[in-house]
Image (cartoon, rainbow, N blue to C red; front, side):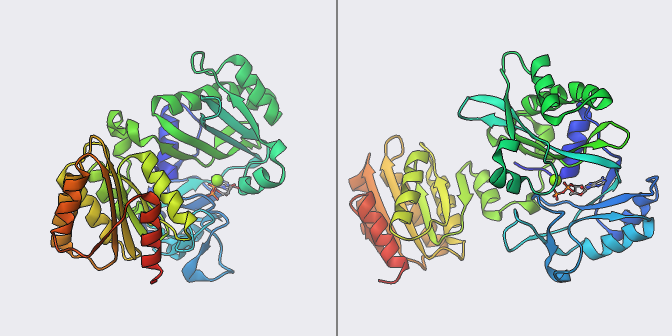
Length: 398
Ligand code: ADP
Ligand code: MG
């Protein structure tokens, strides 16, 4: 689960991280009202969407010459003019995809006197099986470019989870940044604070880009991007409160209601599979035969008929889906339950695209019988390879 920049900053601030004064607003009137409470002379108007790259982003409605999704303003009037231009329009950034995202909230913030822009993130280093700080002196708006062109400028500092952030870790990060004086002392307190927030709130990513050194020599979190581990949300009701479902895929929200592991993708073959490994293999083999999956969907080990029905409805409701592949290896999951769920769903919502079904394992024969006797127009397949070839041929119309 992702949250907005302003929410991430508030959260980090509650752990003690230094941030600028700011407020989130939903209208031009609020933007004016709140900007008046900030001291000026520099204000920043920041689009709140769940995607980075806003500064260099472009508003679809405003043309290529208009300013981006993060704007500096030098008076309350300028804040208002910018807010008017930005609210309700669609921001396209490197991370939103070509469709972009509508800007419905703005963050109006005190401008900072920036000396240097640094990069900092905390993530789980899967190779080492530990949390790690990823740091670079090249912070700002193009960290992807730095990673691509000069990867040696990005340094990983691995953290021993038993010890937490040690004085040596802090010194190492401070050295990478080349900080001294007050900025270095700020680092000594800030890095452990960020790590504490990361661990306590079960984040999967905490990215501060930029972390700034200000002209007065102090550090400040200027941008923050936080993702939480969805599997740990049950123990963070305060985090769940921050969820902005308008930023999420409607199909994924529906799927989460039924506890389905579902991720929407760009292709046109809808997949219903049990087991994450089999789901991955199914997606791979669809690609091998030259087509693209429309989703990842693991209905889980012991799915009920209701769950299967819900899953099938989510897949068929997606207009991009031009064919469906059901690939079930029945273990705990019984094939006849899948068959009954599919038939119940088809009865409710109809079936307008080709459907290929491969059932194997527990109660496979019974499942096939149920489907064969249902009168549905289903192509049955013998194994994974056969199933993938048949559905790819069906969506390609041959
Ligand atoms: P994004 O990463 O989505 O482009 P940022 O919040 O990092 O958005 O803002 C982009 C750039 O705008 C920053 O790298 C910084 O140069 C400038 N900026 C952002 N917030 C402020 C601020 N409060 N004061 C001064 N400059 C800012
Ligand atoms: Mg940024």
